[in-house]
Amino acid sequence: MRAVRFHRFGEPEVLVYEDIPDPELGPGEAVVRVRACGVNHLDLDIRSGISRLGISLPHILGREVAGEVAALGPDAGGFRVGDRVLVAIIGGCGRCPFCRTGRDNLCPEARRPGINRPGGYAELVVARVEDLIPVPRGLGFEEAAAVPIAFGTAYHMLITQGGLKVGETVLINAAGSTIGTAAIQVARAAGARVVVTAGSEAKLERARELGAHDGVNYSLPGWENRILELTDGRGPDVIFEHVGGEVFKRSLAILAVDGRLCVCGGHAGEIVDLDLISLFRKQARVIGSFSATRREVELALDLVARGELRPVIHGVYPLAEARLVHKLLASRANFGKLILNP
Image (cartoon, rainbow, N blue to C red; front, side):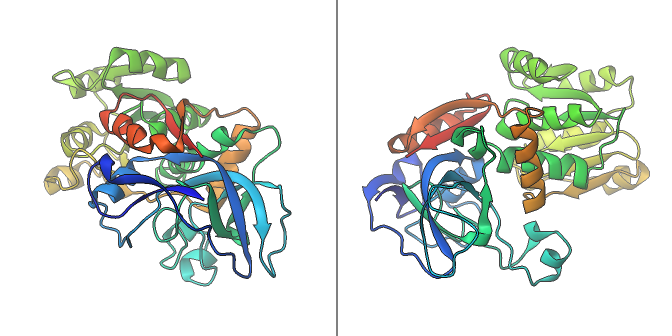
């Protein structure tokens, strides 16, 4: 089969489009013919060697895999050849305390395509049948591949972790990112007032089209003061933060009293100073949020299939153009999801 791998860490040029042996099929497993694979910032971190994950080389990236069952191994029941499926971004062990309490996103033994298993930058992927999720009828492969990380993460951050309530104000940073576009829609569906930041007026306008009530350009000096003005000096009740660095620090500074800041990333700076006096006097809550549970992904997939949420796809590219797609994502020129199609 054809796949994109990297044999050493580095810039996008380390990605190699090459022929490799087809994956071997074992008991309880399925071969999935990949029709679409989502590209995420984590892919860039893994490729460059800064992800803090134990990656074995050569490696195949790709966390979000949508396609068709091409073959089934012994004892692989529940699916037939030709079924349209997603490969779960996290396949829990089913035994640990996290899996038994519905928090499989925290399973220490989880199967994670694109991390500890070969991912979707390939024509074929092998997965355990229990890690397959049926794609609802009428939903395209590109749309399905755009759901798990964007909408799963947004739901986990805003609803499960952040406890966003009707009538609250939420600030969504970097609204032009894939998870930003999903968070706008999840927050609107929850009945919140949505304020966003983005790096250009064009992205702010598109965010308003998705349902944002107000927007501020964070490339302008003093953008955080404008957020305070929009909230009558209170600040947001909930902040959806995945930028890090100065954006994290300024966001925390304007968080409302007794507010919640949920964070799932920090590409602009992973280590920041924290004023503990301000933190506890405001009774602020900084909440880490990691990925999404399988149940949350299934819920998001159902809402997309029913038309209540809509993936925003910037573009679909041939697998051979993986280097170009990584450069495009790194430039932040996209608005919405980038998809590879083998």
